[in-house]
Structures are given as C-alpha cells and as structure tokens.
Length: 390
Image (cartoon, rainbow, N blue to C red; front, side, top):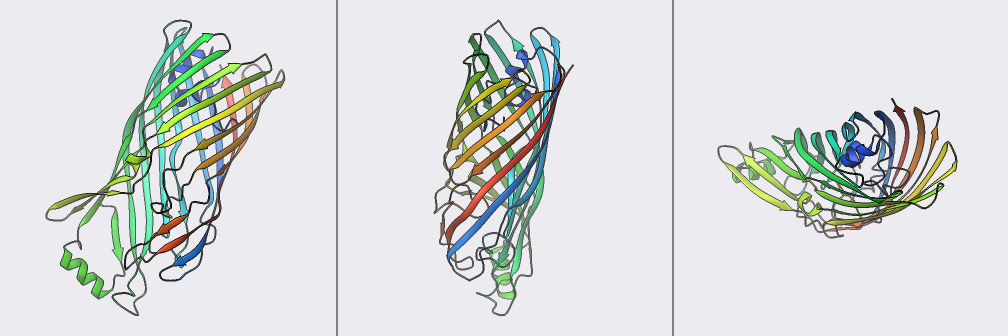
C-alpha cells in the first residue's frame, strides 16, 4: 500500500492488509496469512512567519520522528468465507512549535493520535462478486497546548497556558465489495463510517493573570469543565486493478472524505449548567486520486510505484497551525521478495508534500494576527513488512 501511494487500496487484495482496507478482498487469499509492518514517519514542518501580533520566532521544525506499525491476520474458514482482523495506527499526527514562536497564542503543541482494531468478515457470493464488513474500535488521545496572553490585561505577567488533555474510545464500521469481471481485472468499493469522539473534562488553565482571571470569573467560564466532541471523517473509495501481462499491472483510486464534519467541533462548558456551542472551522470535503503500477521483474521480486493527490480541507483564512494541511501529493515506491512459498518480505518509502499551507488569521485581541506559510511541509514514510502464509 505504501509502495503504490495507496493506489489500488480497495482492489489489490494480495495480502492480509486487505482485512482493514477492504474485507471483501480477504476471499481472494488462498490460505490463512499474517502481515506485520513496522513504520516510521519523519515530519518536516518549518513555518515562515510574515507577520504576527506579538513577535516571536518561526518555531523551527515543528515535526520530528513518529513510530507506528500494524498487524493484520486473515483466517480461511472455508472456500468462500474468511475472518480477519487489523490493528495499528489509524488517524492523526502531531506538531510542536515550542513556547516562544510567533503563533504561540494559537498553539504551541498539538497531537491527536488514534489506534484502531478492526475485525471483519468476507464472503464470496460467486466467482465475480465478494462482500465484506467489519467494525472498528478506536482509542484516541488528544494533547494540545497554547500560550495565554496575559500582557494585554496584566502587563508584566508571563504567559499562561491552556492545555487540552484527554482520551476516548469511539466505534465505527466499514463495508466493502470486490467485482472481478474477468481474470486479471477487478474493482473494489469501500465505505468507512464516521467515528465520534468525546474528550471529557479536556481543558485546564494555569498561570492566568488576575485581571484575565476576574474576567473569566465574571463570565461564568472559570471553574467549568470543558468537553470537546469531534468526528473522524467518513470515507468512500473506488479502486481498480488490471493485470496487463504476467509482468505488469496498473491500479488506481478515486475517493471522497467528509472533512467538513471534522471541522465542526462541539464544545460543552459544564458547571451548574451546561452550554454547548459548535466551533465551525469551515473545512471542506476532500477528493483523492491515485495511480500506480507494479512490475514483477523476476519470479520472486515485485516492484511497486505510485502517485496520489488529495485536495485541501482548508483555505488560508481557515487554516490553523495545529493542523497545517494543504493539498497533498504523495509519491511512493516499494519492493517485495518472496523468500519461499510461505514467507514474503518487503520495504517501502513514501514522500508526502503537504503544500505551502498558507495561514492568514486575524485572531482576537489576545491572540493577535498570524500570517505566513511553510517553507517545508513534508512527511517521509519508511516501512518494512513480513508476510507469513500458512
């Protein structure tokens, strides 16, 4: 999957990772098998500040190294029926700009990490049609910090801090089908539901100046517990795969994700009463396109390459430094070696260009304006995997 930049994800169905990508594809595997993958991400995100309200630096490289991995297993119950499970990193990423950068009153650190377990089943109805379904159990952690500007109301006071720190478990499901109109040609269609997450009692404040604290007390906000609800987007993907000849194959995707729902975050203030309001970040739904190829240049060796493009969920006036996503271009390549009839090993690399991600925020009197873009905004993915058939 990494080697093709995701191209053909819903239609490839050549190993146990299809348990998570498209459960219907499990029926294509002739034996039970397991796939284990170890992956590392290196995030390189460097913001170039053009103007800000309260000074500060660029924040250096807000990224760094992030370890991840996955485990997939498919069990052959009978000729037409398979059970499978996938587990691993599911959604999210993080940035850390430090405490003295120009956008510190927007965020200094932001991290949303989601781990998922997805059991499922696949059934072959006939030679050309298979269907599958699964359900997801997701564990999510939210860790976000921003400086609080005391200088406006309490000159001489150092910055305070707003911290969001909570976790939750969410549930969803996925559906899939594969169509094989003829040998060597197949299509896959998948749907993955949205998953609602509720981070309870998430917010805390410290080192708030007396005037600002008095304003919070007068407004009734002080002492309230803050709950944050967010939605992981639902997604639809259509993939195709075609074997041109015994050596070459091509594959591609068209997909859609409902990022507009992720951008609508419900905040609830709970004290003696509860007040809920929606913070609409005005995100856009996104479209995904990918194209890839595989070449078996020797009986035991398979080389993959692919490119993908995703539209941006945000614009410069809605984009914030805690999620600096722009349009995304991915280029991936990978190689697999069949060690013997039962064992295959592989390695892959993918480069993701997340665009300039221009930010043009006016902010309020405590945040100030923030304007700039990212000189570097990229992620490098490295992975090795092992497939064991039995």
